[in-house]
Structures are given as structure tokens and as C-alpha cells.
Length: 153
Image (cartoon, rainbow, N blue to C red; front, side, top):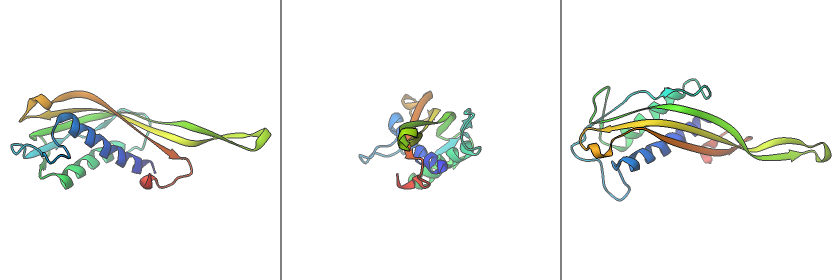
């Protein structure tokens, strides 16, 4: 369940990253023709919480996105575009408490919020005006505690 949410966060992160650096828009513009390659460093997990493979999963989802949606060649190092970062926090918090049982009510969480915060650096070797370093991105998703499959949310 949490891995599905991480997958969704990855797509949101990529969208913000691309819009923030001017590389892509849904208005028909595309990646500059000079840009041929992209490289990624694994996003390091600085968060004490979350799945143990969150770092690898997040990085691989970003790579998959670029592989499917661009003509860029993914290279190990030294791409025309370089992306790296860290997963800084992963937290679950109650957002909608509910009660059952009348006078002797027991309180439960109706909705839980999963929040992920990442810091990312982006290097565009063909157009440095879009570069940024340690830019923070935060995403959240509210889900029902009883939901096992978040892919429909």
C-alpha cells in the first residue's frame, strides 16, 4: 500500500521538477534538442521511517518515467541533465479521527496522511538558467486506514 503511494509521489515529484526547471510543459514544448542524455544518482534515504527499499524504488520510478516519456538516453554518469537528491522525511499522521462505541467510545483514525519530503538537485549542462541545488519538494496523500489498494485514490 505504501509503495503505491510512493509511486504516485514519484510522478508528482517529476512533474514539479520538470515544470520548475522549464524542461517540459504540456503546451507542446519539449526538451531542448541539444539534450541527449540524463543521469541519476540514487536518492539517499535520510528518513528513519518508510520501507527499507524506498531509496531504490524512488530512484527507479524516476528513471522509468524518463525512459517511457522522453527520448533521452539514461547514462550512469555525466548526462546532459543530472538529477540527484535525498529523501528527507516520510511520515504518517492522523487527519480524521472517528469514534465508535457511544459512551465508552474508542477513537480511531478515519484518514491517515502520508507525507514525503525530498531535496533534489538538478543540473542542465545545456542551459544553466534552470539549474537548482537542494530544492525541497513535499507531497502528501490522505488515505483510509481500511484501504489496502491506494492505486484508485
